Amino acid sequence: MPAEREDFPIARVAALARLRLSPAEATVYQAQLAHIVAFVSTVTAAAFDGPRPEAGPGPVPGRERADEVSPSLSADAALANAPDASGTPKLVRVPKIIG
Image 1 (cartoon, rainbow, N blue to C red):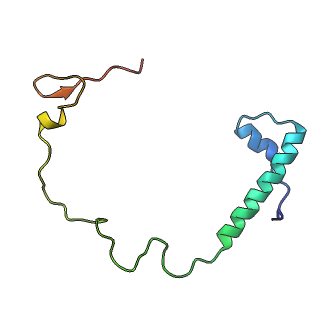
Image 2 (cartoon, rainbow, N blue to C red; image 1 turned 30 degrees about the vertical axis):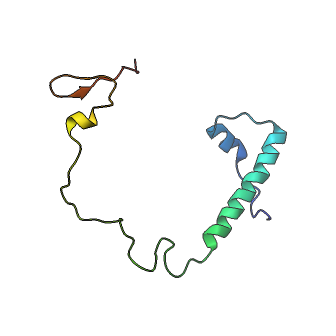
Image 3 (cartoon, one colour; image 1 turned 45 degrees about the horizontal axis):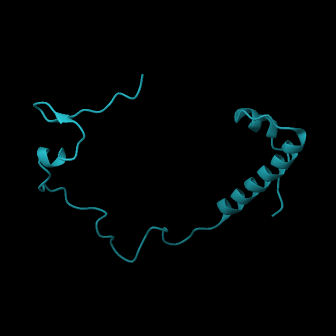
């Protein structure tokens, strides 16, 4: 796939990525970046007429459901496998991991 542009500021891109490139690496990455941008432009130019990709022949079950109250776990059942559940409102104690 031929590149349409060869004048990308590869030094600027490398600086933004905090990379130090040798002149040989810069030349290689310059060509690779040109190929990537050319490929993206071909994908962008593709016509996507017709139905959207996620559209199907009918409604998808389970995507939207009525908001109804349903039975849930009790506090004791939810905390049954907790490593350190204690206190009078039932709470789970977790170790401090930050500072």
